[in-house]
View 1: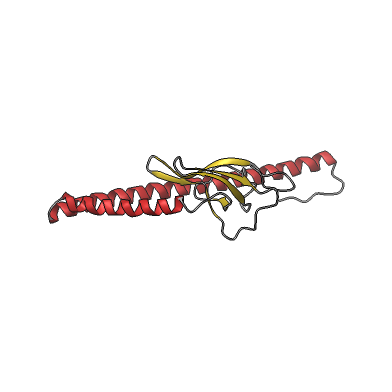
View 2: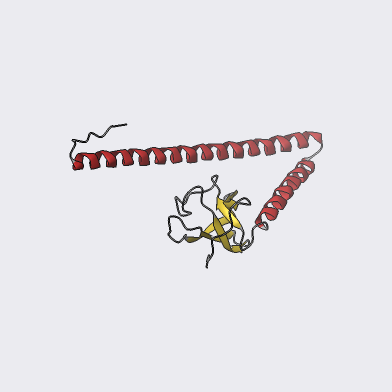
Length: 176
């Protein structure tokens, strides 16, 4: 990027550093935006595939003898998906160690950064929320916030955090 010369005035040096910091911030934001757009496209393709699969299943079953068989298959698929969701919902409990789920995370650095961990303080599976206290970063107390845990909206299930079985133990003094 640039090389500072010892004879440059401090103001020029400071301006160059600020410009470099701004460039790095813009690059990070661009990468995050591209990542979000890619995930949105993947979700849209997944929904299209599911719709196409349902349409083909319905057409095929009509030809073979009726819609009842197609509905039965869809019911079984939905039942299996429901069971997987329920198992995941119930896998989290107070005291569990978690980290951000990159697939759904949209909360910036509330968690103290990508590699930070948090401790679950409470779980509300009925409403699809979990309360997390994030580990301290640079000597500052970690933030406490609520995150989606199996919350469904418009046919999508959101999991803002995920279990972190390899996380270090929670720091001493994690309070509510």
